[in-house]
Image (cartoon, rainbow, N blue to C red):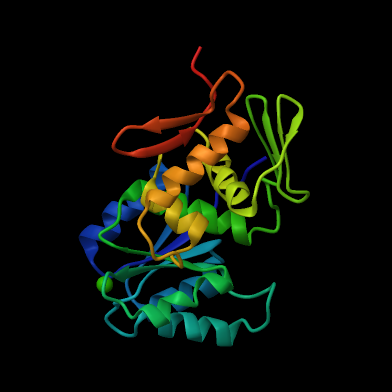
Length: 234
Ligand code: CA
């Protein structure tokens, strides 16, 4: 059973707010809009959102200040405030945003693609949700148990390195959706990898040698775009 998840969308620019609101509703979320930091704080108290999409540049206070006030109002881990996905400009200070992931929060930089925003929201909700719906994933005859770190293909165990496991986990969590090299770098290497993105192609090939030596192939290259893990089409 799934319940509709409620997002608080804090964005002062009307056009962007309306566009995001419509897109997020289309993606299946309930959306509570807010235009200022003060409105956002009130809406958290009254509407209990599951996640906050929070623009950093707001007219009355910045998004980081909103987050600080929420932390003060909801101290302690576990029962804290809802996770926050910040919308930042590309030139936002790295040191301010680098610590976000530790708290279960995340950020996307403007301009962003709507599909990516939805994927990030879903990923943060999964990470922070107590229900943990994706601990065991199955795609065709490929199975992953996240807790025991066990991967089976056609019932046979597959030994993966930690990075290979993380990459496969992200692909399986997003099965059927094409992920770009940048998205994979971001989610598997978490921005702390400084080199070029050919590392993604290398790890995709390691993974193929381990899980796709059998038919049907599950990892597909989408030329010029990225990679997708999906069941073979009949
Ligand atoms: Ca703004």
